[in-house]
Length: 316
Image (cartoon, rainbow, N blue to C red; front, side, top):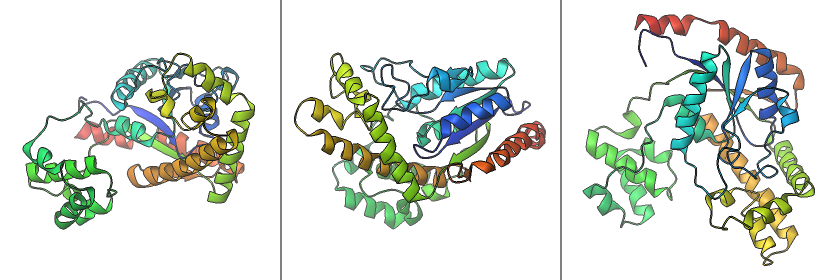
């Protein structure tokens, strides 16, 4: 980006599943002349509507939505592809004089876009990586903890890929990962997060799963399995992978539904953790306090009119 130009403004809406992100995105798009960009890893797939809680045409209320139904369920889709397509959508939306609004619960997708993280595929092998890949996960983590306990505390013991990458960075740069300068945001992004009290969120998730089953999620999975193998990336989505054994006749429906609910609750917890620790998020509970929506609107309005960051960018 040319430093003589201010950063493009984008609004981001994230947080756990079943908190009303899509509805808020449409409302703010109507208020601020915006267009919505999907930031959910599985709503990109065609034919996966019920289980991904994909926004319907009626719910879009005439607001243009991008990056929905763009991939066949038999094809893989990566964060690299998402970032490239989202960047193109942001450029086009901004050129039309409208506000890009990226909404979804896949926090890493949103953050990779916000920070323009380098995601050019797997890094070439190094001698250190070859050596480390034969070590036990606990030993790897202990090795990182010995040289960079701050970074180790943020990486689960079982995430060997991140542990190895952290050790490689330390060896290559001579600087601990925890002391590396943070990446510079590629956009002037305002990040809104929706959440609610945990018990209420979990109850809402359980009810939503039941509603998906009643709406025909089993039939949706049956249709997908006619052309898509169970091993396909698309069918690893929560709500789909649990129903495959039921469709194949190996588990009862009640057990499959219970598994979807349990996995959805765990995923919601991971979503909260990611947004809280990785993104500068302004949190709101619209489910318990719908009356605070004007507060959100005021925040977006003030940010959209604030030229201070633009001014700082021009002076750099």
